[in-house]
Image (cartoon, rainbow, N blue to C red; front, side, top):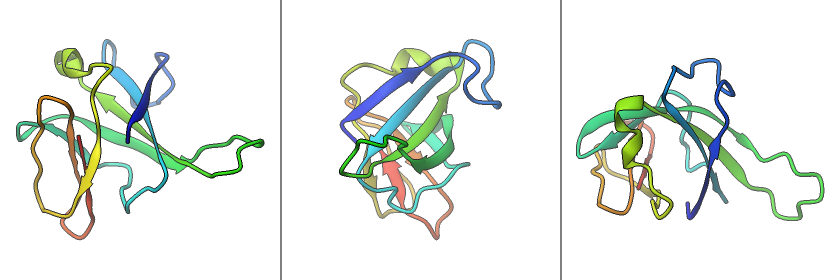
Length: 112
C-alpha cells in the first residue's frame, strides 16, 4: 500500500498507551486478517487489529483498510515514506522503506 494515515488514540479497543495506530488503504486485502504480526528485521513490532472495506458512499472504487497497531517502543520506525507490500513467503523482513507483516503460514504476508 502506498497510503496510510495515523489514527487518533483510543480508536482501537486493543490500543495501548503510547502505541501508534495507522490505517493502511489498499485495493485488496490479499487474504490478510486481524492478528497478523508486524515485523521489523524479524522482530514483532505490532499487529493488524482490523481489516475491512472503506466506507465511503461516493466512492466508485472500493478499497480495503487494514488497521495496524505499532508498539510504543517501535513507533519511531513509522515514517511518512514507509511502504507496505505483499509477499508469498512464510517470513518477511523490513527494508529501510517499510515494515513487514506476517500471518499464519496458510495466509499471505503484508510486508513493507
